[in-house]
Amino acid sequence: MAAVREQLPEGRYGRSADDRADRKLKIVGAGLGVALLGIIGWFGYDYIAGQKISAEVIKFSVTSDTEVQVHLEVRKNADATGTCTLRSRSEDGSEVGRLDVAVGQGRTRIDEVVKVRTTARGTSAELVQCTAR
Image 1 (cartoon, rainbow, N blue to C red):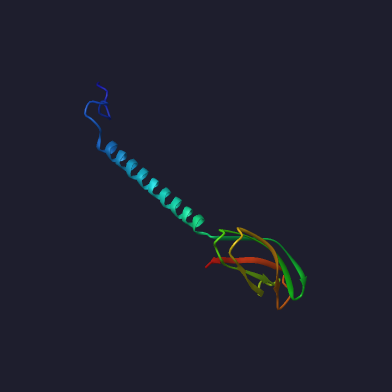
Image 2: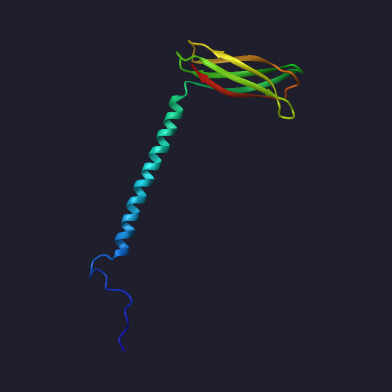
């Protein structure tokens, strides 16, 4: 009895349709992957380069039932101006104080302590946002 072959001899009849389809799928997948990485890179660059003002709360201190002191550090371009908004929350999470800090031209780094007046005892202080003008 002769052995039954389930496949054609390799290299004798060229590539099969499955091999061609696999190659096309790999090329299309690689192209889409590169495009996706490019889009993510563009949005990341635009987000970082587009921010003219960035800030962070270094620390805060609850000084009384009506005041929270916040140590704020702002980094920006020398010509940028804008506003940074701080808020304080009570123990139950409700907002008890809010302050808009004006950021002027000139310096690239501002490090200051500001007082946020509260309507009840604040237990936290956070930076909401900084916007450039």
